[in-house]
Image (cartoon, rainbow, N blue to C red; front, side, top):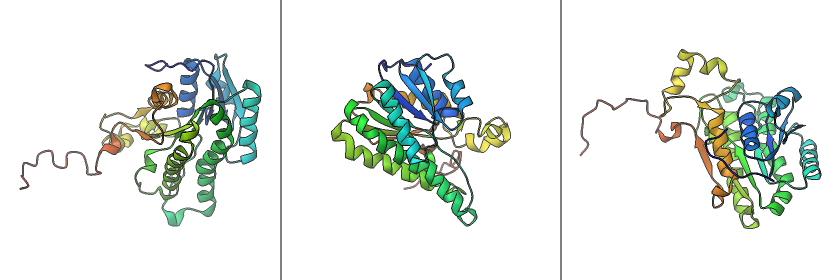
Length: 265
Protein backbone atom coordinates (compact mmCIF):
# COMPACT_ATOMS: atom_id res chain seq x y z
CA UNK A 1 0.00 0.00 0.00
CA UNK A 2 1.31 3.45 -0.91
CA UNK A 3 1.54 6.19 1.73
CA UNK A 4 -0.97 8.40 -0.12
CA UNK A 5 -4.33 7.21 -1.39
CA UNK A 6 -5.90 8.11 -4.70
CA UNK A 7 -9.35 7.68 -6.17
CA UNK A 8 -9.06 5.23 -9.04
CA UNK A 9 -12.45 3.62 -8.51
CA UNK A 10 -14.15 3.02 -11.89
CA UNK A 11 -10.80 3.46 -13.66
CA UNK A 12 -9.44 0.77 -15.98
CA UNK A 13 -5.66 0.45 -16.12
CA UNK A 14 -3.26 -1.57 -18.28
CA UNK A 15 0.21 -2.29 -16.86
CA UNK A 16 2.70 -3.99 -19.15
CA UNK A 17 5.50 -5.98 -17.59
CA UNK A 18 3.15 -6.50 -14.67
CA UNK A 19 4.46 -9.88 -13.55
CA UNK A 20 7.56 -8.86 -11.64
CA UNK A 21 9.53 -6.02 -10.10
CA UNK A 22 8.35 -2.47 -10.71
CA UNK A 23 5.41 -3.63 -12.83
CA UNK A 24 4.12 -5.85 -10.03
CA UNK A 25 4.41 -3.02 -7.50
CA UNK A 26 2.63 -0.58 -9.84
CA UNK A 27 -0.16 -3.08 -10.56
CA UNK A 28 -0.79 -3.72 -6.88
CA UNK A 29 -0.65 -0.01 -6.05
CA UNK A 30 -3.43 0.74 -8.53
CA UNK A 31 -5.44 -2.22 -7.24
CA UNK A 32 -5.00 -1.02 -3.65
CA UNK A 33 -6.42 2.33 -4.75
CA UNK A 34 -9.58 0.93 -6.30
CA UNK A 35 -8.70 0.50 -9.97
CA UNK A 36 -9.48 -2.40 -12.25
CA UNK A 37 -6.08 -3.46 -13.54
CA UNK A 38 -5.00 -5.74 -16.36
CA UNK A 39 -1.46 -6.95 -15.71
CA UNK A 40 0.28 -7.82 -18.96
CA UNK A 41 3.28 -10.03 -19.60
CA UNK A 42 4.60 -13.06 -21.46
CA UNK A 43 4.38 -15.58 -18.59
CA UNK A 44 1.14 -16.51 -16.86
CA UNK A 45 2.50 -17.68 -13.51
CA UNK A 46 4.09 -14.40 -12.35
CA UNK A 47 1.06 -12.46 -13.58
CA UNK A 48 -1.20 -14.69 -11.50
CA UNK A 49 1.03 -14.09 -8.48
CA UNK A 50 0.78 -10.33 -9.01
CA UNK A 51 -3.02 -10.21 -8.92
CA UNK A 52 -3.61 -13.04 -6.41
CA UNK A 53 -6.20 -11.98 -3.86
CA UNK A 54 -7.40 -8.98 -5.86
CA UNK A 55 -10.95 -9.20 -7.19
CA UNK A 56 -10.31 -6.43 -9.72
CA UNK A 57 -6.99 -7.84 -10.89
CA UNK A 58 -6.83 -9.45 -14.32
CA UNK A 59 -4.11 -10.78 -16.60
CA UNK A 60 -3.36 -10.90 -20.30
CA UNK A 61 -0.53 -12.64 -22.15
CA UNK A 62 1.03 -10.24 -24.66
CA UNK A 63 4.38 -9.79 -26.34
CA UNK A 64 4.62 -6.00 -26.54
CA UNK A 65 7.05 -6.21 -29.46
CA UNK A 66 4.24 -7.70 -31.57
CA UNK A 67 1.89 -5.01 -32.85
CA UNK A 68 -1.00 -7.39 -33.52
CA UNK A 69 -0.85 -8.76 -30.00
CA UNK A 70 -0.82 -5.25 -28.52
CA UNK A 71 -3.80 -4.24 -30.63
CA UNK A 72 -5.68 -7.34 -29.49
CA UNK A 73 -4.80 -6.54 -25.86
CA UNK A 74 -6.26 -3.05 -26.04
CA UNK A 75 -9.38 -4.21 -27.92
CA UNK A 76 -10.05 -6.99 -25.44
CA UNK A 77 -9.71 -4.66 -22.43
CA UNK A 78 -12.07 -2.08 -23.92
CA UNK A 79 -14.56 -4.74 -25.04
CA UNK A 80 -14.60 -6.28 -21.57
CA UNK A 81 -14.67 -3.16 -19.39
CA UNK A 82 -16.10 -0.54 -21.74
CA UNK A 83 -13.32 2.03 -21.47
CA UNK A 84 -9.63 2.59 -20.81
CA UNK A 85 -8.29 5.30 -18.50
CA UNK A 86 -4.61 4.71 -17.76
CA UNK A 87 -1.84 2.89 -19.58
CA UNK A 88 1.43 2.15 -17.79
CA UNK A 89 4.13 1.11 -20.24
CA UNK A 90 6.61 -0.73 -18.07
CA UNK A 91 7.77 -3.74 -20.12
CA UNK A 92 11.44 -3.60 -21.02
CA UNK A 93 14.64 -5.59 -21.35
CA UNK A 94 18.34 -4.91 -20.75
CA UNK A 95 21.51 -6.04 -22.47
CA UNK A 96 24.86 -4.34 -22.10
CA UNK A 97 28.12 -4.27 -23.99
CA UNK A 98 30.38 -1.84 -25.80
CA UNK A 99 29.04 -1.06 -29.25
CA UNK A 100 31.61 -3.15 -31.12
CA UNK A 101 30.38 -6.18 -29.19
CA UNK A 102 26.65 -5.53 -29.66
CA UNK A 103 25.17 -7.77 -32.35
CA UNK A 104 22.54 -6.56 -34.78
CA UNK A 105 20.10 -8.97 -33.17
CA UNK A 106 20.66 -7.51 -29.69
CA UNK A 107 20.32 -3.94 -31.00
CA UNK A 108 17.04 -4.69 -32.76
CA UNK A 109 15.70 -6.75 -29.86
CA UNK A 110 16.27 -3.89 -27.41
CA UNK A 111 14.52 -1.39 -29.67
CA UNK A 112 11.74 -3.85 -30.50
CA UNK A 113 10.73 -4.36 -26.87
CA UNK A 114 11.66 -1.06 -25.26
CA UNK A 115 10.71 1.45 -27.96
CA UNK A 116 8.49 -0.34 -30.47
CA UNK A 117 6.44 -1.79 -27.61
CA UNK A 118 5.83 1.72 -26.27
CA UNK A 119 4.90 2.95 -29.77
CA UNK A 120 2.43 0.11 -30.38
CA UNK A 121 0.77 0.48 -26.99
CA UNK A 122 0.48 4.24 -27.28
CA UNK A 123 -0.88 4.13 -30.81
CA UNK A 124 -3.54 1.55 -29.98
CA UNK A 125 -4.58 3.10 -26.67
CA UNK A 126 -4.77 6.76 -27.70
CA UNK A 127 -8.26 6.70 -29.31
CA UNK A 128 -9.72 5.36 -26.06
CA UNK A 129 -7.66 7.65 -23.84
CA UNK A 130 -8.91 10.64 -25.83
CA UNK A 131 -12.46 9.51 -25.07
CA UNK A 132 -11.77 9.10 -21.35
CA UNK A 133 -9.35 12.04 -21.02
CA UNK A 134 -6.96 9.45 -19.68
CA UNK A 135 -3.21 9.34 -19.46
CA UNK A 136 -0.07 7.37 -20.15
CA UNK A 137 2.71 6.70 -17.66
CA UNK A 138 5.98 5.30 -18.97
CA UNK A 139 8.76 3.57 -17.05
CA UNK A 140 11.96 4.76 -18.73
CA UNK A 141 15.27 5.01 -16.84
CA UNK A 142 17.89 7.45 -15.65
CA UNK A 143 19.92 5.77 -18.41
CA UNK A 144 17.77 7.85 -20.76
CA UNK A 145 18.95 11.05 -19.10
CA UNK A 146 22.70 10.47 -19.10
CA UNK A 147 25.31 8.13 -20.55
CA UNK A 148 26.61 4.89 -19.04
CA UNK A 149 29.71 2.85 -19.74
CA UNK A 150 28.99 -0.30 -21.72
CA UNK A 151 25.31 0.48 -22.30
CA UNK A 152 25.14 2.30 -25.64
CA UNK A 153 22.35 0.19 -27.11
CA UNK A 154 20.21 0.11 -23.97
CA UNK A 155 20.65 3.81 -23.22
CA UNK A 156 19.78 4.69 -26.81
CA UNK A 157 16.38 3.04 -26.38
CA UNK A 158 15.77 4.92 -23.14
CA UNK A 159 16.77 8.30 -24.59
CA UNK A 160 14.36 7.63 -27.45
CA UNK A 161 11.58 6.71 -25.03
CA UNK A 162 12.00 9.96 -23.11
CA UNK A 163 11.85 11.93 -26.34
CA UNK A 164 8.77 9.98 -27.38
CA UNK A 165 7.04 10.85 -24.10
CA UNK A 166 7.68 14.56 -24.53
CA UNK A 167 6.54 14.65 -28.17
CA UNK A 168 3.34 12.67 -27.63
CA UNK A 169 2.57 14.90 -24.64
CA UNK A 170 2.75 17.94 -26.94
CA UNK A 171 0.64 16.39 -29.67
CA UNK A 172 -2.16 15.12 -27.44
CA UNK A 173 -2.33 17.59 -24.55
CA UNK A 174 -5.03 19.64 -26.27
CA UNK A 175 -7.03 16.43 -26.73
CA UNK A 176 -7.07 15.85 -22.98
CA UNK A 177 -4.42 13.13 -22.75
CA UNK A 178 -1.45 13.53 -20.43
CA UNK A 179 1.79 11.64 -20.99
CA UNK A 180 4.51 11.42 -18.34
CA UNK A 181 7.37 9.15 -17.37
CA UNK A 182 9.28 8.12 -14.30
CA UNK A 183 12.96 7.27 -14.66
CA UNK A 184 14.20 4.75 -12.09
CA UNK A 185 17.77 4.61 -10.90
CA UNK A 186 19.13 1.52 -9.17
CA UNK A 187 15.99 -0.32 -8.02
CA UNK A 188 16.06 -3.64 -6.16
CA UNK A 189 14.48 -6.31 -8.36
CA UNK A 190 15.01 -10.02 -8.93
CA UNK A 191 17.04 -9.24 -12.06
CA UNK A 192 19.78 -7.40 -10.15
CA UNK A 193 19.47 -9.23 -6.82
CA UNK A 194 22.99 -10.64 -7.07
CA UNK A 195 24.26 -7.04 -6.97
CA UNK A 196 22.09 -5.35 -4.32
CA UNK A 197 22.26 -8.33 -1.96
CA UNK A 198 26.08 -8.22 -1.96
CA UNK A 199 27.45 -5.32 0.17
CA UNK A 200 30.70 -5.16 -1.80
CA UNK A 201 29.13 -5.24 -5.24
CA UNK A 202 26.45 -2.69 -4.41
CA UNK A 203 28.80 -0.20 -2.78
CA UNK A 204 29.85 1.58 -6.02
CA UNK A 205 26.18 2.16 -6.79
CA UNK A 206 25.37 3.45 -3.30
CA UNK A 207 28.30 5.86 -3.46
CA UNK A 208 26.42 7.71 -6.22
CA UNK A 209 23.07 7.88 -4.39
CA UNK A 210 22.45 10.93 -2.21
CA UNK A 211 19.93 9.10 -0.02
CA UNK A 212 22.43 6.32 0.63
CA UNK A 213 20.22 3.36 -0.24
CA UNK A 214 19.05 1.44 -3.23
CA UNK A 215 15.54 2.08 -4.50
CA UNK A 216 12.60 -0.26 -4.13
CA UNK A 217 9.87 -1.05 -6.60
CA UNK A 218 7.37 0.65 -4.30
CA UNK A 219 9.30 3.92 -4.66
CA UNK A 220 8.41 3.86 -8.34
CA UNK A 221 4.82 2.75 -7.77
CA UNK A 222 4.02 5.82 -5.69
CA UNK A 223 5.30 8.13 -8.42
CA UNK A 224 3.36 6.25 -11.09
CA UNK A 225 0.15 6.61 -9.08
CA UNK A 226 0.70 10.33 -8.60
CA UNK A 227 1.41 10.94 -12.29
CA UNK A 228 -1.78 9.07 -13.25
CA UNK A 229 -3.90 10.84 -10.63
CA UNK A 230 -5.93 14.03 -10.73
CA UNK A 231 -3.32 15.60 -8.44
CA UNK A 232 -1.07 15.71 -11.51
CA UNK A 233 -3.78 17.18 -13.76
CA UNK A 234 -1.53 20.04 -14.93
CA UNK A 235 1.55 17.91 -15.50
CA UNK A 236 2.46 16.46 -18.87
CA UNK A 237 5.66 15.79 -20.76
CA UNK A 238 7.62 15.20 -17.57
CA UNK A 239 10.34 12.62 -16.99
CA UNK A 240 10.69 12.29 -13.22
CA UNK A 241 13.89 10.68 -11.89
CA UNK A 242 13.26 8.15 -9.12
CA UNK A 243 16.90 7.70 -8.24
CA UNK A 244 17.59 8.85 -4.68
CA UNK A 245 19.40 11.91 -6.00
CA UNK A 246 21.78 10.14 -8.38
CA UNK A 247 21.19 12.56 -11.24
CA UNK A 248 21.59 15.57 -8.93
CA UNK A 249 25.36 15.04 -9.08
CA UNK A 250 27.76 16.38 -11.69
CA UNK A 251 29.51 13.03 -11.95
CA UNK A 252 32.47 13.94 -9.79
CA UNK A 253 33.14 11.42 -7.06
CA UNK A 254 31.79 11.78 -3.55
CA UNK A 255 34.13 13.70 -1.18
CA UNK A 256 36.26 15.04 -4.05
CA UNK A 257 36.47 18.47 -2.44
CA UNK A 258 35.13 17.81 1.04
CA UNK A 259 38.35 18.90 2.76
CA UNK A 260 39.50 21.43 0.16
CA UNK A 261 39.60 24.89 1.75
CA UNK A 262 41.00 26.78 -1.24
CA UNK A 263 39.19 29.86 -2.43
CA UNK A 264 38.60 30.79 -6.03
CA UNK A 265 38.66 34.56 -6.46
